[in-house]
Length: 245
Image (cartoon, rainbow, N blue to C red; front, side, top):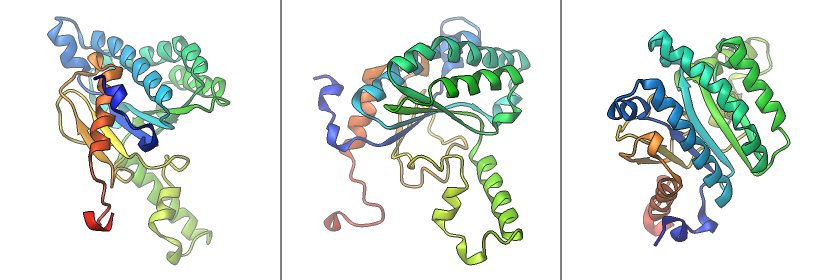
């Protein structure tokens, strides 16, 4: 039986986050440079985005480029920025055909100007789509996000906009870049690595973690559906015991 047929559409996670890992190792297996893996990873982005929209996922967030990725060789970073420009332009029709709204989180102003401008144009051109929100985490890290949130909270405390008693979990969430979306219920990481890599650390406090050995360029719809089936097989207790549920 296909994994798609095993999914209970009434119990879908509203928000799925993905760490797209393994492009470089996939390319090495094929005797190609790392950029070859990144280019082939675009097909997986398309497949997963379409799959998520088709079954009714409201939010899909993909870790596309971390703040630490600037430490990679300049040639790879430059190729990734160009690939992002080309991908946003080439996938615009697919996004609109599937009524997917493009969004982005991270320290976006520090992206190269051409990359930033293309990204903003893609966001503008899809802003009225309402089937699903596809968020790209770019120049993003959870520590950067939380540091930025603390800085802005401190500024508002100093200005008298907030008082010390206003600071709660909910208020901190309002200062994060994911303010307009629910916390992810499922986090998928490809390539066999089992770590979070500074990704949505506040938001995934109660997320189910799913790790697969499949490299990102080989990740397809059925792999995505398999992760959801696994998610639905788990008992989510949120600190309670089974009998309370």
